[in-house]
Image (cartoon, rainbow, N blue to C red; front, side, top):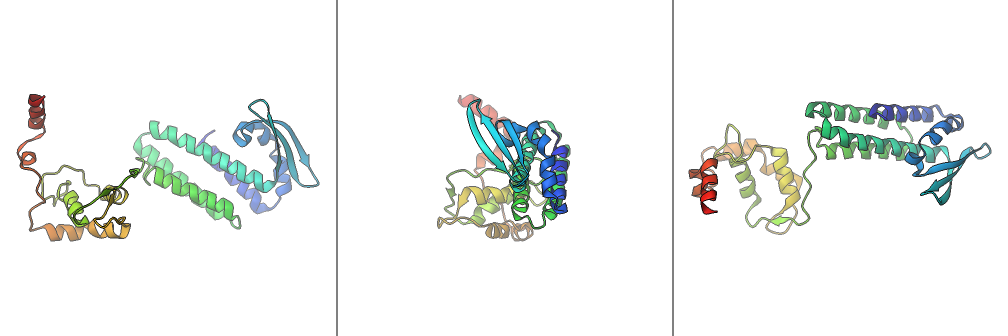
Length: 258
């Protein structure tokens, strides 16, 4: 199934919900229930009987070839189940596309999905559970693919490193030695301020064993203030060997020592 198919399917369900004819819509889903039993129920549907009095499906499901379970599927429970099934399908397809698509093509795909999901959130109306499900999925996509669809966000390590000096010393070091027109030292990092912020917040604590907040780190990485403050100062010094040796010389030195 394509991502677009899943989004269209979810949109049709929400349209049905807004139209208010739940009984006829649930009866219509009979073919879909039988068409994708493993995706919906993780098993085979051996019996599917419409209960006109209670307006629900009475299902008998067999799992692993021998475990029989009974499910009463109301319209509300079915909608929740089918929506989660389609979101799981989209999640699986994104993993494949992330590996095979060109970065810009994948970025456009993510942007399009988020746009569609925001539209679905608006359609939810008085359905807080579905609205929460869609909103959660949007957050997941943004965090997983870093809002651009180009890469996954950095995962924090389990144990954070304690900074023994001021946070400002470390952030200034990153700025001094990252490439920009105002670089003071010989660049060793690509300047990526969002990545620097994430690095510090996720992997370090301050000298008083406190977590470093986003607000604090935003202040330290205000590049305008940093550049102005550092304009007439020397960069934080690295060992002399770094300044004297280029990459080739370092490799030759390592080979001679081995």
